[in-house]
Amino acid sequence: MHICNIMKQIAFALALTLAAPAAWAAEKLPLSAISNYLNQLKTVQTTFTQVNDDGSLSTGKLWLQRPGKMRFEYDPPTSAVVLAQAGTVMIFDPKSNQPPEQYPLKRTPLSLVLSRNVNLGQANMVVGHDFDGTATVVTAQDPKNPETGRIELMFTGDPIELRKWVIHDNAGTQTTVLLGPLTTGGTLNQNLFSKKTRSGSDDR
Image (tube, rainbow, N blue to C red; front, side):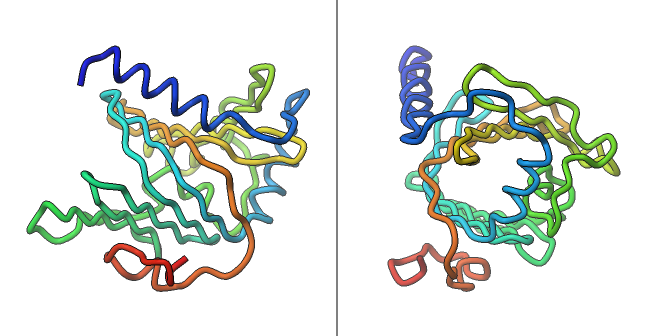
């Protein structure tokens, strides 16, 4: 894809994601308020746009259940499914005849969001806490395993809402996930976190 088209798509995705209907934070959110927000966030359903390290875009649906469970379902042509549950991340690639790629959830910075108790005040966890004039950006790492990479989390305020994250892995690449409007609360079908098949309307 031509680089100009890629940049236009990224700009469009950012514009859609950041057009929050609620008022944004007028000042930097404290870490304690963000920790409380994440700890109260039990279930989430939303759409996402992923900006990969090479500038390419992917879209799909996301389900999250804290602690420890997450499902990314990518739209065609990718059509991959990524599951996090029981401490393991599994990547199902429909184009591959190989078994799913697996690795421990604790080896990815997303484990910080999915942990049972989020405490951003923990020593050496937060390595950046900034405010860009409209949103608070927290950069965090696992203080016990900083080599696994770090995650930037962007929050708007009034009320607090997670809008975006950027994962920087230990290979030096970064992946940005822009979240659509969040539907929180309620009960999710547990098959979402145990089945690689694409979800239907009954799985939401």
